[in-house]
Image (cartoon, one colour):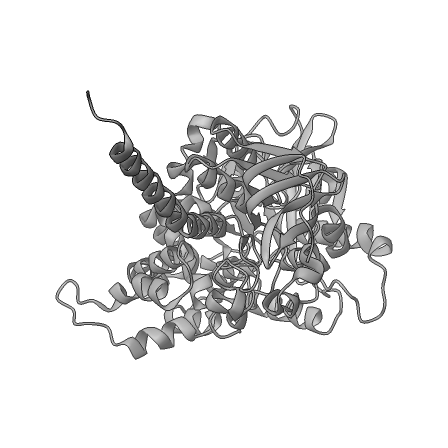
Length: 555
């Protein structure tokens, strides 16, 4: 047992970590009238949803850049973040895939342009891949968009039987004269691999490669069971596209901070939690690195599950002490490039390519090879890049005549089988990823003025991501929904340590910019407080009635 000692301050809830999930949770708690303090060890707000001045006058994201899931969640509207300065630039077209080889003729020489407008997208698919795949894609959106909305709804609920049933049960209902879809048919579709789904629907490898590369951003290769829904999330982007906050990804967490402070909450940077304070099997607050003690009835840990376990120390009950979810061997490598121009693809207007995700993959064999190298602990023999350049539409990111290009390369091992040192390899691997973009956009390498390379090791150092996994925990089927981070901890609470709540990418629904775990964890915490509030109200009413009976009557 750890004695809480004398607290130097007291609040209703301490939130550990200022990542976007922690900030979302803090905002919902403060909106409900609780006093909230967020403590963060970093001097920069936002965790992996943050932006810094990397070079003079140049604002560069440290983690995520394109925000997808949170724009489908309702959180931005519920917290009215637009009123607190958040403004998104839509990525429309949201996806672009170049022709297989620059300058080739015929249908394969046309780029794929994936727009919010479904008709425009189908026209592009028809020109690049043929009318049959265009018609198939339209039908794919018709069938899978409602299913993807159900997935999005499930992301916003606890992953228990009731939440999953509420999200997915309506999918089988009869509609438009069609009978109920058998549950077995739905199960086969949802449990299939992304590759199998794509092969069932489409003929063109180019189209399948672009959609597979988009789906693979969740982490697993599209050959794994249960990845079909990751591919099908693309159908929702015809409703709401990805977006990039004006001023950088950190614009989201900055707006959350302003919202929190408007409701009386506070954020402390540079003095994170060092340990949890507990007494008699209950959390009583936190002690920060500086030694400051904050008394609290609840602590919401919006950090990596391994960090939460460390903060609990000897007070960790078995459910937390024994939690060992799969972290994987790294995830990816990021190049942040300062250039004098956005990537330019032959025959493609610049605004078409630079608006969204540049999916630089034309054959799924490239993805399979990269993942195979990762599984063997090797560097990818042929890196597969995804490029983004939001400075083309946001002049707050770089001075005139300069641009910020982010290049993401997936499946780079944290621990290399040959014992290679990432600090020695960073520059050369960054240049190889730049060269991979240059193969599709000739001249890109010559446009690069400065490079900042975030290897898996650097991601661990800079963003406190163990083993460089930006999703915290593996995103395979066995680590999702009621299995995330473990079955015992999937309800956002810690059995055996009352008052401790969990949020962040380690919990359902996982990584990516969604805010869902923060909101759900806040809802769970608030629901746990209601019986106490009702008891206090009942006690107050009883006292008032007693006082009324004892009050002398008129004489």
